[in-house]
Image (cartoon, rainbow, N blue to C red; front, side, top):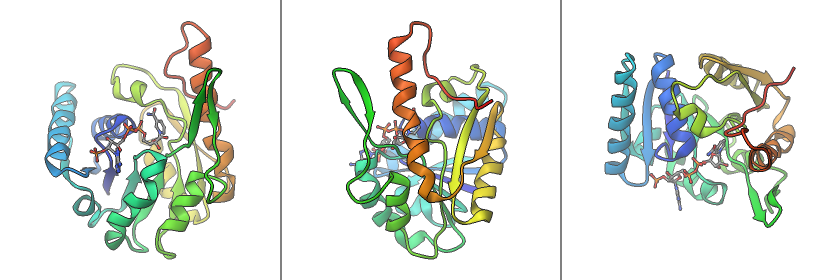
Length: 223
Ligand SMILES: NC(=O)c1ccc[n+]([C@@H]2O[C@H](COP(=O)([O-])OP(=O)(O)OC[C@H]3O[C@@H](n4cnc5c(N)ncnc54)[C@H](OP(=O)(O)O)[C@@H]3O)[C@@H](O)[C@H]2O)c1
């Protein structure tokens, strides 16, 4: 499978690229607004995976080129740039492409982080679904994965990622990819209208890490 990480130069992109690169045979493409930056990051990820005995296929390209021919396009950009970023890759999307969004909108005040519902919809995942062409399936996933723990390749995970999708086949495909990551279990949380419940867990994880010594880069395991 060809998996493109749009904004794959950032934190969650790095974590997913390193884990996918080390633990799966998928072809990875790192997208950026700046193709040189994308190539630099792809090379860095390849070297870090190689050092641990992996052999990953990781390329870098400008976001629109990176999305061409992808089976999975992960939108790893901050929520405020999501819709504009989708606009830059729309021509590369078709009913054969699954778009994955991990994006969460939060605000911060003196007490910590708070979930923030987007103005336009119930969740950022729903915003993404509205922004892509009608025939392109959208899956919400990876919202609660801690980027820094993923990027630390020696760290054990033992965490879940909750998946929401209206298209059952697309949801199963993304769940299968997530479960290829060692220590990650994919759990199904229903349709896209349930995305806000998953997104709202992320600020809780950050607040728990902030207020409890020894708890860093938290994920969640449902049991
Ligand atoms: N960090 C986490 O632990 C984590 C975990 C789960 C989910 N998430 C979600 O994943 C998404 C990305 O998070 P992140 O922490 O990886 O973000 P980030 O590191 O701040 O940014 C990711 C990438 O977004 C691109 N970007 C920045 N400004 C942009 C703009 N104006 N237009 C288009 N692209 C822009 C940049 O790529 P280029 O400059 O190369 O284009 C950047 O490397 C967020 O929605 C977040 O809620 C994050």
